[in-house]
Length: 253
Image (cartoon, rainbow, N blue to C red):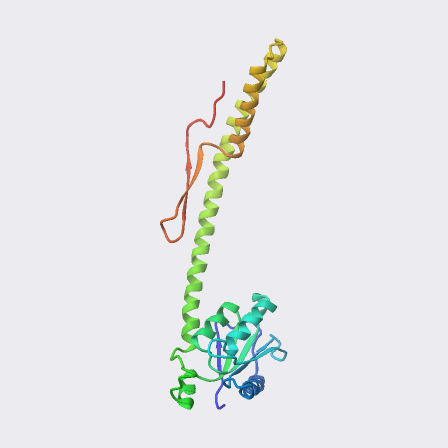
């Protein structure tokens, strides 16, 4: 292999393999490809290297037309390592990952990719092959576009966080104003109970009515009737509205 192609979404801090390290790992990936060929598979191979740029964590040869070396390794890596750990790892592969493998590597969160030759060069070497059709889509193209989606996700999450913070402050403000109303009604209830007890005028119907009043006061404290949360699911991202009535929250006699 006469060239080294190094791809990274955003190069992890401290993960800077030397030229010698990259060549050594690419040669190892090529050995895996040769081993795959011995087992009757297409000659593609890859390895996953830890952030120290020395430790080989996984090796994988090509299996079939839908289980490529890179995508198979990425799926296994996801089940064995955290996404944070994989972000600092490097995948070395003999040829440029196809669009399918590039997307799988992205979702696995493997931070850096080094390959020996491009997809275009592979087509020049093999020609049109129905058993191994190539996709004229550079993996860089895939990474650039998913990164744009990632930016959109981050912007959306930030807007949602800001909106949630505004709603929280609004609810805290009106809840603080709502609690004194509950206290007033509770004091009225307590006065009525004391008066009836003082007059020795406790009857079963009054006890039942006061029980219901206590339940209503408790419900009003936990779920104020003057605050309503509505959801609009027609938009791409559900909108949430908070309606707050200025009328008196509750009244009992």
